[in-house]
View 1: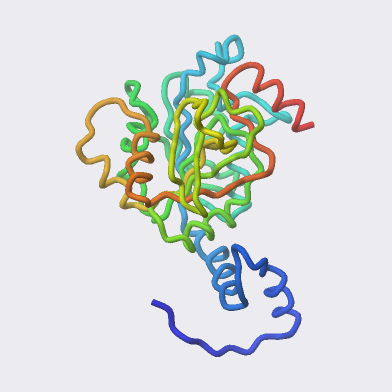
View 2: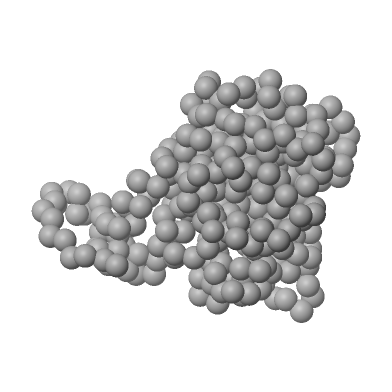
Length: 275
């Protein structure tokens, strides 16, 4: 429900508001004001859950001593780049879902104070899959929406803009999507307008889309309703697919820097691109 409101603003502020109107995502002045308010308000209230418990077996020899999320790019761990980007977007509460060999993460980040955030840890005692890891952290998640991020992604995304997009779209899940020329190693996504219509976890020859899952989501708390009957190891992509079938998933296309550091080759390419 929306209510009519009359306000008086300086010309300089109105000019800045009008500069955000693109006729596509932001259609008019009223829409622009709502977008900017969402962008300002929601980031400070939003939690971020980072999945950093992967074993990184495909990243050997790099991961013999360090978890994948702690591999350095520009002299900082991948995870540190992510935490600092979240902080700069106004997000102050971060939950790390960690697994074996997590000592390096604990030692580097501590409680997050020196990074300007508060970090809470959820330790996996056994392999749970990405969905199980999120479910394991459920009791600590009180914000709706919340961000869900894979800890091995090196990205320059605007989290404030992403959150505002999610609020405007008013669906259960927003998936960040990345256009790539080579999609073989990633799950392909099909869209109609802003709606995600298909998710292929592995490259599909019949699918012509160049959009892939970027490993970044915005989720509403109600997503956990789909977890209630699950008691085994499972992946978050299975839950996302359920909501795609219900037409409750939208896509946010990110054209900027993005690397899924899943193999030594990917890691080396990310290092080169970050120079």
